[in-house]
Image 1 (cartoon, rainbow, N blue to C red):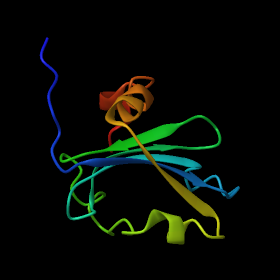
Image 2: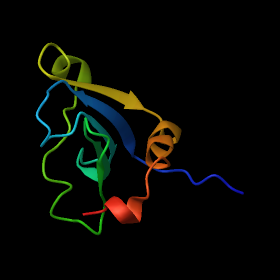
Image 3: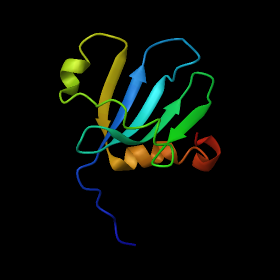
Length: 102
């Protein structure tokens, strides 16, 4: 099977250090060249998850990811790390995306 190359996409894992059950603790994002997310998996402390993609257009592509992740990671409650497409797909593989899509 041929590997599909995703052009100009970046992948991020965000750890949100907070205890509010209304907000996710982990966020996995696929981000386009405009720095807006195109797919996103949110995982909550209780193990539940939500998935967003082009079929949920009002939930993705709302705010841009920072250009300089290192500067963004200096302090604060959010820590963003660039990951590979494979790591992103691995995170998605643990969930029934049709069942958790909003």
